[in-house]
Image (tube, rainbow, N blue to C red; front, side):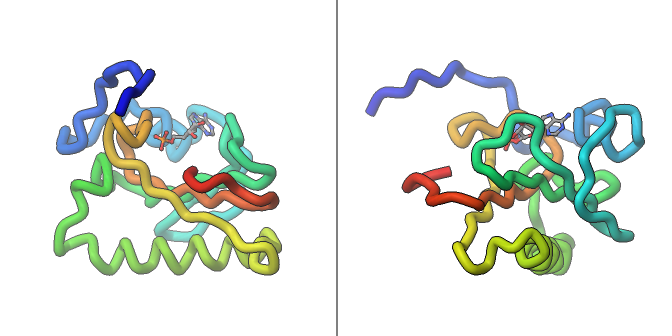
Length: 130
Ligand code: AMP
């Protein structure tokens, strides 16, 4: 199988980088089109949407760099993240048509931001993969 992806530099087990773009969004240093905020999560519209509705949901603070960093201490967080995503999808009126939730992990998945995040995609028939 061939791939035209360049080899990336995401280290899925790296310590948290406090200068990553999502950390800067959380600090208010970079603007974002927020659709949801609570004490634990922030969700905003993706700057390069891959579907009519494309929202990125992120935990506040310094979560794992990628899904690979989810350990026993993050199990409840991961569950609440899925629940928040489903609630946001409902509010975005995606339930009738359906939607996709995506967690990218590392280079081959195309992960570019080293802060755990979940994509919410919908609003059209999606291809077989995100
Ligand atoms: P991933 O490729 O899974 O790491 O997802 C990172 C996502 O963040 C990509 O879909 C980007 O388009 C998105 N993104 C990067 N910078 C911003 C930003 N400033 N505001 C909103 N979304 C962003």
